[in-house]
Picture (cartoon, one colour):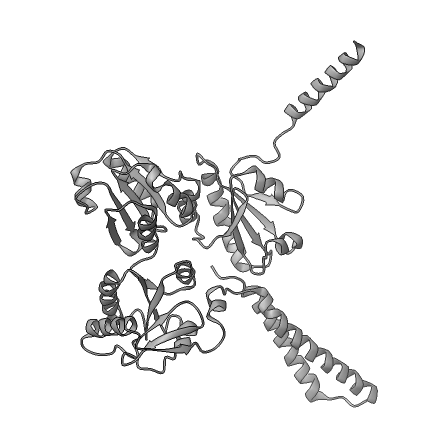
Length: 433
């Protein structure tokens, strides 16, 4: 009996202590400071946590910090909270190595413990709007015209929006889960004819895609089978004609369609903008291809890989590898009737009148996945250090011989300045906003 009483007392003490313990992390709206001792606990404690890997000397990190401080309380108060945390990657190097942090700031979004690098906006208000999507329902159910309007407004312009009118949520649920990181999904149960006119569909069921950033809209009337439905969703994740950038290249890489790439001198010239309108017409008629464009002035490092010695604008077919196709007789689309030239180019490609070429310079895949990485500077800094060491040794020999070498001393000073300059660039040249 005494033994039973002792056991009972032990259990009571245990539960009292557990209840008395404060939670390891609190949702107080502040940015969590993580280290090697509490990082894994934080990741497992929250469904959604945004982690900023920073370096104290990094200028971009210091500019980002107050934006994260401002966003943290708003995100913490969501129905499904999103927590913001930070790690000093210079101090806690094992965490930096584990998550392959080689540039600052590196921001990882952990959804249910799975990390994805964050490439969204950095300003507090926009960051909040962007991240809300990850805490939202897979498929939102809308029951009125006003709820549809509110949903579209709150979705913002960062992601495409899909609205199933007269569709059951189960029809698009699998795709909504699969593409949750890339788009908003919803179904509208009750809506008026005014909404049908606004979103330009005349019968139900219909799946409407909106891409507010590019002011594009498309409607799908079926068949609502997995293969056809997913093709529609995938095709509308990116605009009809894609401006090439590091971010859009990653989007296009995830799409298995080949790219009809148009290269112009300057994207901002009026004639380039008119050309993009013509490309949209061609893209609408050839949805099995991605149409993209790039300006030499905007992204010369990328554009020059496709032999821009040809008169611009020019078009090529690129499958995202280090090879591309040039269409015989359509090397350039410079001329008065560019729509005809574009059609001729696509026709030539489909008929196989092509020549395979190899991109110039380093691999395009490195360009697609490239961003400034502090490790890129290790080798040149190492080489400069070796040169300085050799010079110092030579200076030491000169002093032993009693023969001062003013030229060499002056050169050594210049080299030291060069190292200081490189060190400054190393610190200021971290990952760009």
